[in-house]
Image (cartoon, rainbow, N blue to C red; front, side):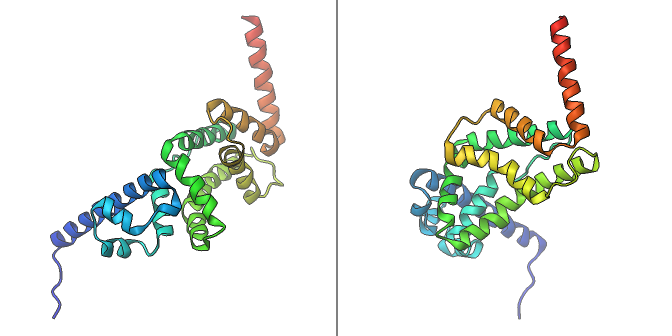
Length: 219
């Protein structure tokens, strides 16, 4: 006959599981930063996190899922800007991404994951369904609000917009290795705005720019 656990017992068990989970994710980030994804093993994580291998396999069925969860832990909450202006929202999103990829842990871990995706289908699926879907969902909300305000061109495909905006950051981060800073976020957001914004928003932006330059000239 099984005995039902008391709420206090269940709560204590949940707390232990959460401590073990967080310790394992921290250990994963440290190990990948030191030896790369190929050097990551569940045994190494269990040893560094001081938890049992049984606990590891209960929480994650593979090191691929463990690695993707570790990435997600770096950004547990994505701040979704809502300034009321698509250009400003776009800049804030790109600036947040710039700061994220300038951090040492994501800067090492994400390229490792991307380089292994072609060889590990499970890793690729987990990365796309977890980390990438989360970030694209946040960006979709920004695009949806902009479309409702009449700030986006009517002929734009949302998925293409997501690829274009994300691609600007990833190309510089993973391919060219160029500087990622606030100035890049500003320039990239302005370039993207030129192709994505509705004619009405572009006219407003041009008028604001002219007014700003006139104001500076009169000072």
